[in-house]
Length: 104
Image (cartoon, rainbow, N blue to C red):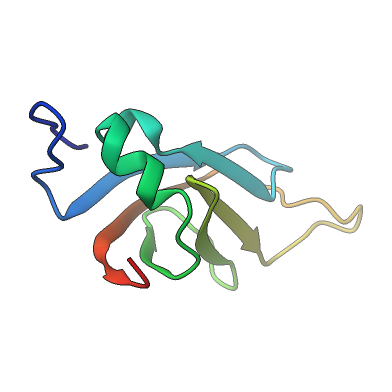
């Protein structure tokens, strides 16, 4: 979550929880609602943003990666697949973005 005051971005960290459905390998989380409009306009141009992801229900052998691009958090998962090539379980992941570290 995040809180905004006027046009100021008072919180350094933005966080949330997302859930992959069975078969889903990519999730896109828009970050605009977590930031003030003026801060988001600068933030969305950044190319190096620190992201931490922590799966809370991932099966053994599954990994999740997060990257921020154009103001969106893109979460990707890889891991155990069925014989049909699909990820077979749902996975919940907590994410955290540092809005100060990186190239901003």
